[in-house]
Amino acid sequence: MPFLLPKKVTQENALQLQKEGLLNSPNLRSIDCSELKDFDSTVLTVLLAWQKKLMADGQSISVEHAPAKLKVLAGVYGVSALLGL
Image 1 (cartoon, one colour):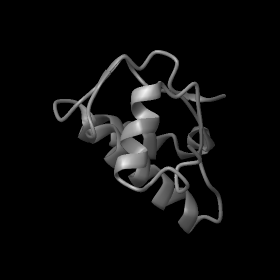
Image 2 (image 1 turned 180 degrees about the vertical axis):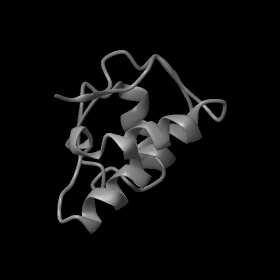
Image 3 (image 1 turned 180 degrees about the horizontal axis):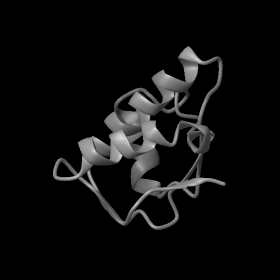
Image 4 (image 1 turned 90 degrees about the vertical axis):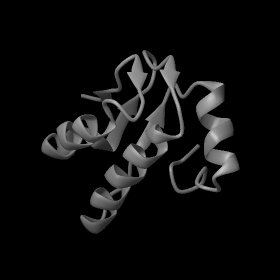
């Protein structure tokens, strides 16, 4: 079952979201961004933290339904390949 990102990911909820994801690490292999609408570069911090955890376990995340803005941000920050975008 994919881990569904909420509609909003900003500095206000990023730390809590990161913790929730790490508590559900088996579901982090697939991240569903279909609901994600209101976000900033903080979402990349969350995704990278999850990717780091999974890489330590010999796995990686797959980001699905990524909005165009997320793909652009990942490109600007140079993490597109790391996140599979």
